[in-house]
Image (cartoon, rainbow, N blue to C red; front, top):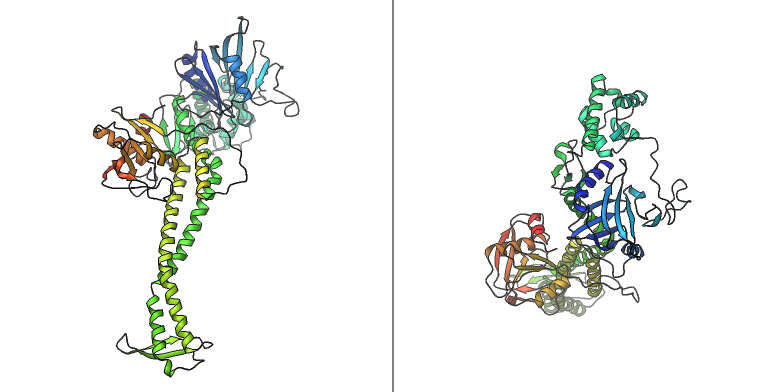
Length: 581
């Protein structure tokens, strides 16, 4: 969902006391639509002008930055580094926020800058203004051809978006509400009536007001009697008062473990079909909400080709393995071929060319009669030779098929681990590493001479147990190999039992780790595996010296001995608490 005006006001009210007076130390632009201002005291302010998730919030998440900062980022650094936050405002009940900044120019003269975030869906933008409110630069330039009514270009004075005749929710009155009701089409739904007439009401809030008024979200105006219309106004006025008094509650709706929506007031319209979670702050809410949603979107967009390549290769392997298993089962009956050849040889004296079958006694089966098919175009001797040849071929095929099936099963398990890596990928570098791994393994085609872009070397995920012990978790198979290879032989190595997952190293420094640290490391191994949604997951652990990689094994594949096993339940709260930022 896009951040509605009421939620945006709640966020502004929450952020203002935390930001006023702080100076900007650094400016980052980790993605095309995202800018992060690092302020004194370790405060990280995220401004996102993306079409799907525009917002302003404090964030605890660390994001990778490109090797070369974009031009817009360089310009913001020039104007904003060293600036002090003097104000944070939301004009009216618009979906825009102004960050007011006091600066000192290159000549030591005081000045002002304003950074405007327009959180308006596909029209979202981030605009830097000078002291006269002229546009210095913007994330997206809007010329006269794109919008004759309101161009946004360097040098032009900044103008607020037009109101288009709607009434701000904060200015709601009973007379105005009653007049709009009297003029409205009775067939209109209650939520559509609110969206058509008032600024600051999102579709979610409009449906919630309809639900609170009529008990259903699609109720129509004609269904309201006089008492119903009065109740409709009172419910809407209660939201107006909450907005005026900044009486907000950060809540998010989750369904089947996935984020649905969020709001600044409790949402009851879904009943038991969705979980309504309350958060300590809007920044904490949006960090979790958008991190989950962006991870899914990131996997869908950046990992789509990797998922197709790995899934396609795994499906081909499965079909090939099924054919090999069928051939292998047939090779197990090769003794019948040898028997047929021997019986034909023993009965040559009574056979003639052109026979289609031989019926004789099977002296290996107490003389019981047996019928052997023959090729009428071959002589009896040639028929016997054909059966012996098929027997020898089946005998050789058994050994070959056994080897090929082992390779196919190994590669199938490897591709399963790669698909798990893609699901856990967090950064652009993670996807690049997985792509390189698949190319190296031969499952992804190389495209001629590929340009190598500068990338920061990816580091393992790092955690600290409650006792302060360091825990490292691999991000992909090649990193798993390096992690285990470079670890101290006295450290403990963790992995889910017979389930794809990351290698986890508990750094002990040669000392005996406490039981709580062992359990926490096991929980991390369970979380970063295919068993994330399961309970009571078996996790094996053993000193690194007991782990080795077989010759010719795929990346991430190891064998180990003399392990111990602990059963744990993966917990997201534990992962977040132990994560090193």
